[in-house]
Length: 263
Image (cartoon, rainbow, N blue to C red):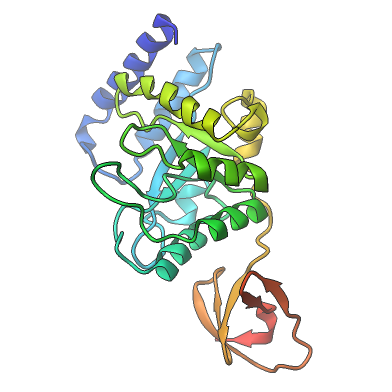
């Protein structure tokens, strides 16, 4: 990292803090905040500042911002920040719901561990990695020293299945950017190569990649009997008829066309 770059980042943090101090730490997107990167990008021609947000995956699986807001951003990261003790099925379905959202580019610290403070929550990481492949969702390798999440083993699993990762410092200050070295070390232990991360992409390809979510393949999960849970509209549905239904095996679950069910 060059000093000039670090000095400019310090300016960015200071500029945004000063210009938005009327909103304090308010989590609501503010039009003026969105305008700051745009104005900076008009003045600076050697790099680009993106507008993004890390949204919370709430305990009921919903996101804390609407699709209308998320659609206006360059990058959307989703993560679980509460409800860590929920059972595996619920935790996994919360993450699946976020992955299914067409505006969510990246899933942050997917296992939720805090080294020395909290164990990982009970997530089915195989299912998350598989669905990330299907939808083109990026998984984070969080380089913050107490996270290092995904770990090297899961990084290699993701690589082998074709998932791209984002090595992210989770920095809240300039000093935190130094954690990138830790992230690179974990990525190397996971045998990640240049093609396996989005960090190595030039701007045009990065922007395209962040918006390249594929059509959702898994629209619903069959729960047994006549019940089905649909991720698109977050509703439990009832099967109309068993005749002519397309069954597709996916792990241990059976998927059906949503058209064969009603609310």
